[in-house]
Image 1 (spheres, one colour):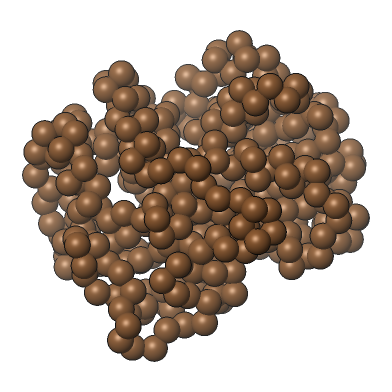
Image 2: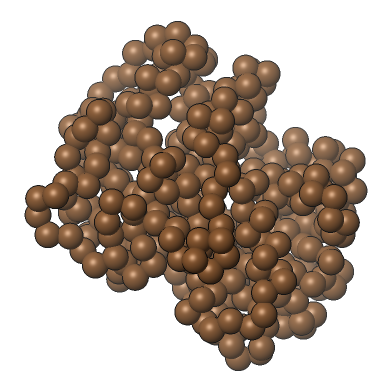
Length: 357
């Protein structure tokens, strides 16, 4: 099988390529990257040694995709993944839309031309911000958890946020580009009879993730902690109780292989949450405690002022993926943190390389 991975020299794309190569299934692996993200160039040589054929291309340019070889499946792992993109003064809103939505359209046209399947790696940030921000939560063991008090929105429970939770605006500019990409991908699949799957991922984390607080909080926090960089709990009283789940990208591969081989499914069964879930969930304060035990104590300052789009508790419920695909995450959070820690200690320049100031 011929597989094309977009953003292949990024953290997620590169991790998937290495996992496919290690599987021994004999897939022909192709990928492209525009190499605009600091740190992405570091993955190119290693992936080439694994036999991955890498092209320099920008998914915003339809003509760049014309030179790519025909494949059986496209896995879209390329995006501007920051919820602050388009509003942080570092990227424009137009650039965000071009990357995350126009790029999806170009990829779908590529798939239509070559009769290829398409898998979109989407995000938990497609879920509506106001009901998430107003979830009844309480602090327990240095982390927020859902409280039994107060009304709860449809599609949320102790296991997490399910697919029927609201996706009504506002979801952020970033979330809206991914949500629109989801809709277009499913429409292309139905209209042109292409196999299409949308996997809404929780926070993806692991060794080699680029160290930016708005894009890879687990990797950023560990790298900053071990280097005694300034860290700060922002918002929610400044206590660090905000919680996210955690998933290693390598755990996606068994799911993707099943999706490659799946018969034609109803549109409703082509979209599912894929996340570490409640078992993997951790707060920033709990993460600091782990880092203190691993690297030695490091003080974290506090700023109770809220920040745009921040949410107290985001944990995805992947019960649908378990039902459809018998899928469960395999890598425990502690194993992910140990992997990041080993990489952080082995690459003391990682923050400067992957997230220059």
